[in-house]
Image 1: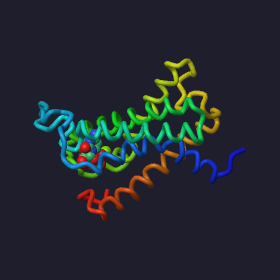
Image 2 (image 1 turned 135 degrees about the vertical axis):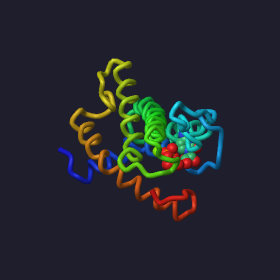
Image 3 (image 1 turned 45 degrees about the horizontal axis):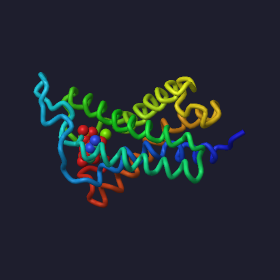
Length: 183
Ligand code: CTP
Ligand code: MG
């Protein structure tokens, strides 16, 4: 049996690579856009200037670094692989979210409630579950690193905990003048 506080702790711990991968690119200045500045048939950018190669490299490196540290000291070693998958998935999910925002005609940085907070979480889960399936552990977010019931708790908790955290960290980034908007 896990208490509520345990579940919050597990959720933060096991989602940390994805959270760090998603949050660290904000520290960068302008970079080279992933879409090379290309515009689609609707007259809008594919992803926009907010998605850069530098951001992908920093996000993946930071997420993997955190995950490998967690796996070295506190988690089963197999978590290192999931950390890489969660980080890559978070960045891909964020790219997909930007793609959707541009198609909806939203400017870079315009708020898209829930999409902004959950695109990277869903991307992280999809890629991580694919890594689990590829390694023969079934289509599970954390393979056999965690009992299935705990995985379910972590996934469900993250769906509301991550949006709350995201709002809090973005508000902090805004106050530190790292972001032009508090969302
Ligand atoms: N960033 C980056 N490369 C990425 C992701 C993010 O360089 N692959 C940086 C950009 O400077 C971006 C900032 O991190 O502005 C914050 O990311 P996010 O909030 O996802 O981007 P937005 O500016 O809100 O842009 P969008 O509307 O496209 O989501
Ligand atoms: Mg985003």
